[in-house]
Length: 300
Image (cartoon, rainbow, N blue to C red; front, side, top):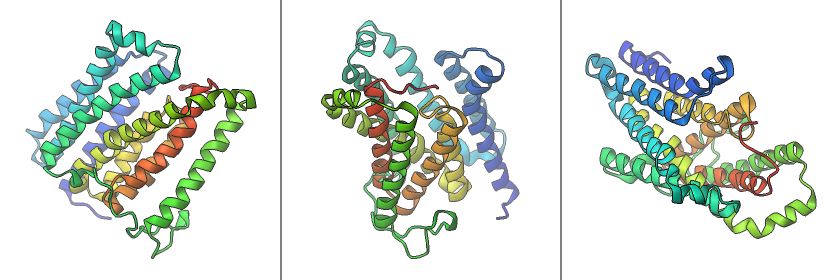
């Protein structure tokens, strides 16, 4: 697809921002072996974004990217407050260090939901309509855009595509976790009383990530760089964001990038959050279940 020089400038700028922010910590730690604290990472990222925002006042071609920079400023600021200040308060520290999976994990996820609320307020002020940033159920049977390499043919709909991919992606996640952790049966049985906490944690985390890292990015980029580029940018950021997740490293980035792209595609085509949240929720149920029994840890 040919882009005008103005469109190319916007796309190139957005990619520079996405890659610079998401790769900073990885490059410093994996290549230069310099440990990067959360506070330093947020500070450097925020300074970079503020410089980009200032550039929009000097370069008219990228002026439509202001909401994109604004989103980053809001998201980074909320994360900075939550994860370098609020989570250091003595009362919060006691909860985060509680040996109970339910207490520690749900406390962390409550902080993340507070970040999500800030992002939602920003998007509502910007867009004036929750449907404009996919905070809606959406059309669950909307047509699915064909993708030959995934076997999605013309005429298929999301009520079938979503159901099928929810099953197969979950099966793949489960297979990976079982092979990687090989949990004994007694450990699985001991986890069962924690199942309500696992389900709640999965629901909260899926909502946090789908709004904060997918719906928000698509909402501010779709009309500026076009749907394909908006989807690719969001998927790249979401994927690299999971470098220190489960699974760890390049494999984790590749899997999370694909999942980000696919779930973002569901948002754009259904104009809603349901399939993205539901599929993500199922993966998180499996991951949090293994976290609850202590069989896997983030970051390798």
